[in-house]
Image 1 (cartoon, protein in one colour):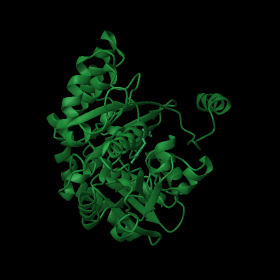
Image 2 (cartoon, protein in one colour):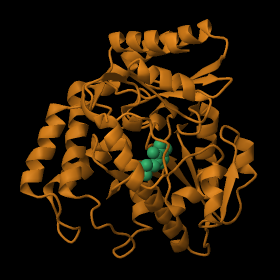
Image 3 (cartoon, protein in one colour):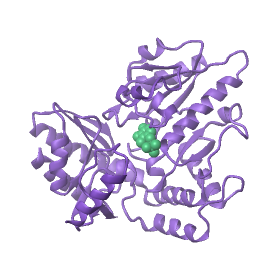
Image 4 (cartoon, protein in one colour):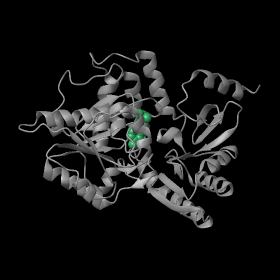
Length: 395
Ligand SMILES: *Cc1c(COP(=O)(O)O)cnc(C)c1O
């Protein structure tokens, strides 16, 4: 029996079947390449779902993690530790927010964002608002609060009514949002660029309009930048493009450089009227191991000017994808920003993705008909050319 089959056999016998996994056992990574346990190499345009922005094996990030591991990986939040202090400063400076709470995942960041909004509303005099407006087609995570604001019925409905008082509007349809605002609206939550739902870019008028609606009605604007943040769209955070800023925002995925982290951040005006000691906590959240990674990742972004690289390389990626689109009638759209792109087909794309894997290219989907391209942000033109060749021939 091949080693690959042995591993898959064990995993399929013991892991809970919540994923239809690809039949590849990954072992190590280097730059923009992954290697399976048989030694086969893959060009990676998925980056562990938009996580490995700096590519695999970034030396400085790895060193920061290893050094911290030898000192202390956990303290609990009953004490201070240096990496979380430094990471909190770095992430607040990078986002333009004033305060952060570190979590262990994206979905926990969403939970914290929702709790912050509800506490803020609960504290307001004369008003006790608890309704949240979310978007159809959105994805915010798998825990109960995040699931409750996720616009995909398939994910949500089997798990009951959720946290309640959530209303769904149409993404990029400001009137549909306006129609749902009531006296009881606490917050509006959305991804600045929808990822999982099929790579949908927000129109400027939509984002600006939501900011205006929030200001006029005393509603908090929560932006989920877990996937589209961290330079992926060509600005450090996607909302910068729209000249607005949210009241509360979430980060995760790329921020930990491969370690499981996230965070919810807010303006001081929100922080001072919401969360107080006792309102929220996490045993591991902000542990020195993960926050050492965050600090190192953010420093690497600065030193290597990752955002400028995205801005330089993205037009070439778009050009090549547009060429692929022009060569195949079954591709109905190419959309996205920066290094977060989607190719929409008029049929499911599972077979193409499988063929690409066999040919040494890793891609993922965003919904059944959309190929999602979220490569490491350090890709070069030659990587894009190789992706083009494999993808084009597999279609
Ligand atoms: C991945 C993702 C999440 C959930 O993050 P997890 O770390 O998987 O819990 C939430 N929002 C968006 C936009 C995401 O892409």
